[in-house]
Amino acid sequence: MLSNNLEKLLNTQMNNEFHAEYTYLAMAAYFHKLDLDGIANYFHVQANEERAHALKIFQFLLSKGGTVVLKNIEAPSADFKGTIDVFERALEQEKLVTKTINSLMDIAIKENDHAVHSFLRWYVDEQVEEEALATKNLSRIKLTEGKGQGLLIVDQELSKRITADDSHK
Ligand code: FEO
Image (cartoon, rainbow, N blue to C red; front, side, top):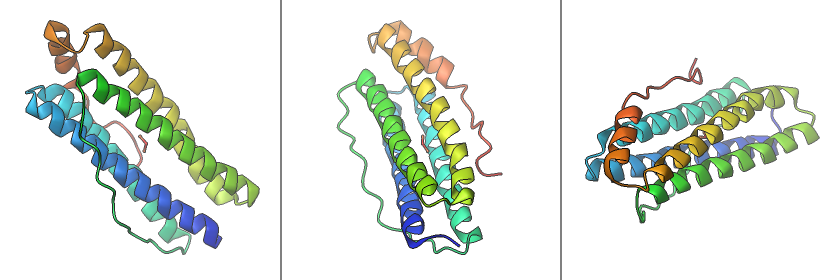
């Protein structure tokens, strides 16, 4: 049985993950407009993963006898100032998700809810990977100065990214 507080916070986190999906879709659209479809592909994969993260919470809420409460998803900002800016914002977003997951974990520990604690460990580990990947991509895009042949090489590399998580298993 979930506490009302954890049920509410898990629903909020589910909404955060759907918002992250939206944000990555906005980033994919930005790169499609630049004809950098490989980088757009990378952000599509990220968006798919965020949706999977949201649905994992959806399933968990139900299996714990909780209620899924779907709320409005805030529109993502799309006023990107260039290719580097997009990758900077992607990293910022991951840091924000890490922060909200950690806060949720703090509350699960405080309430001594072992099931939620165990469930959230997957997200804690996932965020380590997500932040590392976002940091690496930002460094590489900065090396290209956000333009030219370097950008085309990154585009080619990121075109190969495929969904590789087990979050929907
Ligand atoms: Fe679901 Fe990238 O955090």
